[in-house]
Length: 285
Ligand code: NAP
Image (tube, rainbow, N blue to C red):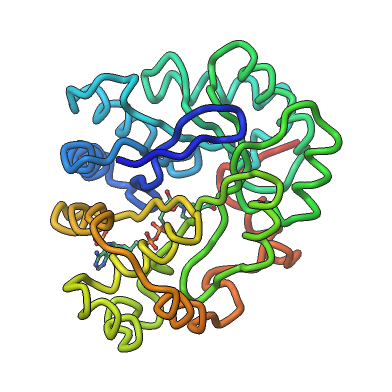
C-alpha cells in the first residue's frame, strides 16, 4: 500500500477501509478481518459508529502486527469539551484494545472545539495518538482552529465524491498542507453512481469498475479514500486501483460531474446542527 507523509511526519496509507453504518458487531468484525486480509491497513471508525469494540476484536484476529495497521477513530460532539474529550480518548483506546491511535479526529466542528482540541493535543504529546485532525471543518473553521491552538491538524475528513467535489475546500486544505480524506467517496451509491454511463465509459477502457475509476480520480487529486463495503469481493475490487492511471482528459470528464451540493446534509445548516446534537450520543452540557 502506497503511503503519504502527513504534516507531522507520520506515514499514512492512501487508501483505507471505513465502517460507518456497520452496526451489526459480528458483521463489522468479519468485515474488518476480511479487509485486512485483502490488504487494507487503514481502518476508519468513530465513537459514534458504536463498533470500535468489533474493530478491536478484528485487529487482534487479523494476525497483522499492530505497527503495520493505521487505526483512526473520532470524537463525537457529545464529548466535545476538554474534560469529556480526555475520557473519550481513553474509552476509544479501551474499546479498540490498543495502546495508541494512529489518527484521532474531531468528528464535527461543533461544541467546545478548542477545549476538545487541547485534550487531543495533550494525548498527542503523551504518545497516545500519533496524529490529530478534524472532520467536516470548512476553511474558516479550520483556520480559526489553527490560529487559536498550538498544533495544526494533519488531516480534514470531508465529503468528496463525483457529485460533490468541494474544489475550493480541497484546494484550501491542500494549500495549508492538511491532507484531505474523502468520506462517502461513492456518495453511498446515490444517483446510480456504480452504473453511471459517463464513468463507465472511462472504466471500460481500463477493464475496471465505476467504483475503481472514482477512487483513482480521488487519489490522483491527492485525496485519501476510505470506501466501505461488507462484501469481500468489493473490498478486493476497491483496493485494486494502483495499476492504472486516468489521463488529464479523463480527469476533466470526472471533474465535470460535480452537482455542487452535498449528497447528505449541509454542515452549515442550523437544522443539521440541531440534528447532530440531537442524536442519542449528544448529551453535551
Ligand atoms: P461509500 O464508501 O461512499 O459507499 C458505501 C456503499 O457503497 C455501501 O452501500 C457499499 O455496499 C457500496 N459499495 C462499496 N463498494 C462497492 C463496489 N465496489 N460496488 C458496488 N457497491 C459498492 O459510503 P460511506 O460508508 O458513507 O463512506 C466511507 C467511509 O467514510 C465510512 O465508512 C466512514 O468510515 C467514513 N465517513 C465519515 C463521515 C464523517 O462525517 N466523518 C461520514 C460518512 C462516512 P456494501 O457494503 O453492501 O458492499
